[in-house]
Picture 1 (cartoon, rainbow over the protein chains, first blue to last red):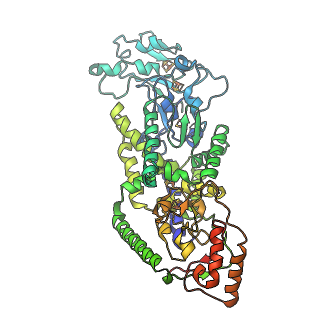
Picture 2 (tube, rainbow over the protein chains, first blue to last red; picture 1 turned 180 degrees about the vertical axis):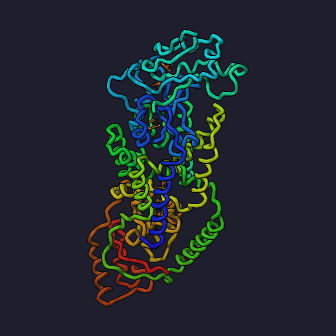
Picture 3 (cartoon, each protein chain N blue to C red; picture 1 turned 90 degrees about the vertical axis):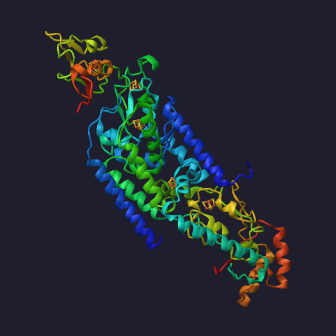
Length: 199
Length: 357
Ligand code: SF4
Ligand code: SF4
Ligand code: SF4
Ligand code: SF4
Ligand code: SF4
């Protein structure tokens, strides 16, 4: 190997150590992963950014993360409940989560016998400033739609999340009408109920 | 199809594979990209990605083992074919000659000059010079280059920081990431700086790191290591057609054409080993005598030369004879030997190493 080769190789080696360090700590936010990707440390070690999970999702609720989510997260899958919600593939594949099934590196992995009620993608959180129910406009769209009875109405008919029943399926966020009523709810960019990662 | 230049075939191959992946982006078949490509849960996995993720998670991923081994078998059979026929990077570097356009023009001119010089040489064969070497040397089938250090860096960084680091800047990944970012911009109005950042990093690699494939790419380096076991489809010289082997002319046309810097006509003395060959066929296309082919297995050049040749070697070495022209023409006695050799074509031993001018 020539001296030039050593210099090129050494520079490349150093560059990759640098890229690793910078990417690891620069602007990383915790993200809502598809089912089976909730252990973030394990997930980020294994995800190849191959896009398979996103492609096969019958409900189209997975999107590639943006560079804004952290360079290390860019292109990894995250949930986007504005595009669809996760029924754990109940309708299209009899409840066999396809994203987990196709993941080549098992970055998405569920324990044996996992079901829609044992899996937890995240948990719903209501923004009281923009929720039409909390603005006392009588909206109960999310409560009526939640398949897992994880939303109830309080004594003032305002929706509240029952956290231990919510599995983060995202249907409430998908159906939430707050953004369609921007004149009432203000300039919020997010819907009034959104799913947040567990940690 | 048969007369199509290898370069065009390679372009076609890369574009078709790219098109399939783009179809995958907008359908639900689950084709994936080159990190893991296939249908649904059947995929081939990028060997570097597989090694990186295993190191990052400190775990052998059961599901990835068989796809990884299939990849290894493909590399044993086809060597670094991925680098010529699948990977978009060489195509991008051809499309964007970039800052080195002048250098490339200079090289093209020098190559053209060399080809002319060889033609003249061939016409007036006596000008060639050769030294005789006893016995054929084994082909130099394994060398490593700077890419190996980059590979070490990629794996070390992955071990330290716990995620596949090289994947973030891999030109293969970035090519498809750029396309996907653009597609989503129009499909969903998804705005992100990725749309600008991915192509920018990719373009920087394409334009600034011109020797990426030969000197830097850790994926190429990993494949090169595995391809040490590749003995098939190697560039093989037909000694009776090659003017270096048969006439002793210092022809370097194939050597100059090889993007990897391999000297296919003189593999024994080639600085770059045959494990780095990407089976691109540039050398075969460049050879004006059609002397290079890629047989599944090369016919073994006889270990012991034919008797007449042996005699000739001894004759010359005893006299301390260095011939002024091609060895097979240096003496009348050789005429017999040459005939014998020609009859036993393909079984001759390569006896000659050419002194470069
Ligand atoms: S489980 Fe099915 S619906 Fe839910 S994210 Fe995965 S592929 Fe989509
Ligand atoms: S299928 Fe697995 S490896 Fe591929 S992008 Fe999704 S989580 Fe990552
Ligand atoms: S509250 Fe929302 S996210 Fe939670 S289970 Fe109900 S619909 Fe799904
Ligand atoms: S060396 Fe790397 S970038 Fe070049 S063709 Fe091979 S895989 Fe692609
Ligand atoms: S030896 Fe021939 S086929 Fe192999 S990389 Fe060089 S030019 Fe391409």
